Image 1 (cartoon, rainbow, N blue to C red):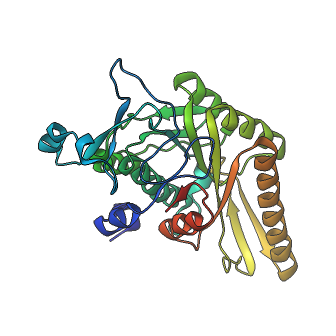
Image 2: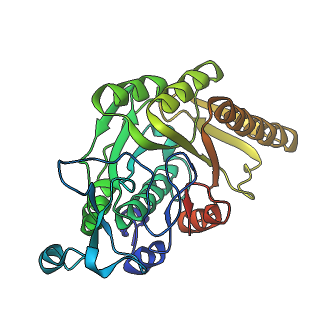
Length: 297
């Protein structure tokens, strides 16, 4: 079965993700068990919102009417708990077609996993596709039982052609309210002079921001000999002779780019998470949980 027709997450993966919750930025998310430090949304009642029941919650706070309708155990969150608005921003440019499976497929799987963690913790998720200087917004998802809808939405995201992350992020900000946490999943293949502008826009789009940087994994060496290179965004083709020296230069340039992206994130106060193509998305998240990056146990 082709990779693109396989589910982004199977039932076993969803169950695994239930042990995680959004984290990574203490100013936005604190603690475990669904206790959030996000924006509370008062609706004129004596509670702010619902969140998923976690062991230790007072059974008297369970809303049994919701359980009868949805078969979900939820409790009324106090004004101090609130939920977190998570914006998942996927780079949809053609440079994301590289790799087997492609970087874009990896981004979809990772977005599906992060969104599932958020929804199962009763946070709110919105997905945007960034390409061609535009942002294509999806539906805001607001409840744990909408995981299937999230997976369907991420799986059918459209594609763009060229990369203009700064313009796309500005478009996202124009059409979407500021989130509590924005996570951009991208290969960050932009001109150095454009990188700083894009990161500034990302940081301004939410109370806290993170970049998941998709890079080649160890062992993804260039083949030696004549190789035809094609720019996926412009269609331009070039044949080069790949020697050991040229391959070493390429690897050094790739590391220099990753270093520049990391430093740019640090300068802007953005959480940076490197995502090698050889690390499965779920392994990446569980590894990040050990360092409390984006998610925690």
